[in-house]
Length: 202
Image (tube, rainbow, N blue to C red; front, side, top):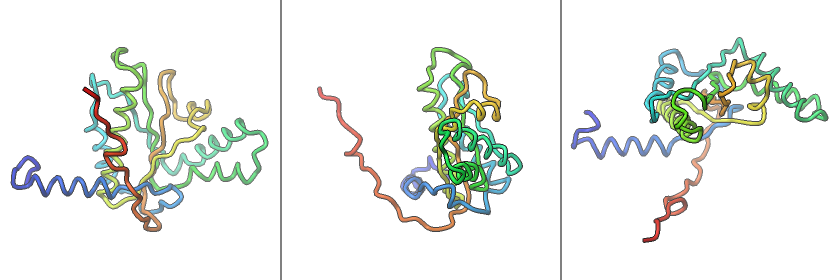
């Protein structure tokens, strides 16, 4: 039954609420195989395209990191760490390198502040990217996968920008990891509307 059918409104909204509240962050180190297959990944990626996009700029991009490119990404992570901290131990460098090999599906989200209408500022473009990310997280959850967003100082590294071919106006926002959760995780306490909503005084 379509979601705009009166008879299905309550059921549909209940399903959506259940999906949103069942989404949890599962750290990449706890995401293993299997990851999404071709059909499932296509559904996850397609969900990003339903995000709001003022001016239809499509200011964000997703870059899939296949297993064959993980070693190069690992070297970028380790190099970025050493550049930030020359005293990093060999163990810390190895841990930085290993992060590239977690989760069977890994994508980088970028935002371009220069494409299209210059009146649409970076903040609004980043919000659009955030909506696309949330859509993908929810679709991954609906398909039974765990997922996580991760960032870090390596995103600012010139080596990372070079590896992903980012232009001057592009910003690396975060990585999206998707896979099968190795262990169940209890639901965290969610903030309630009273925690984040206020009314403008009259």
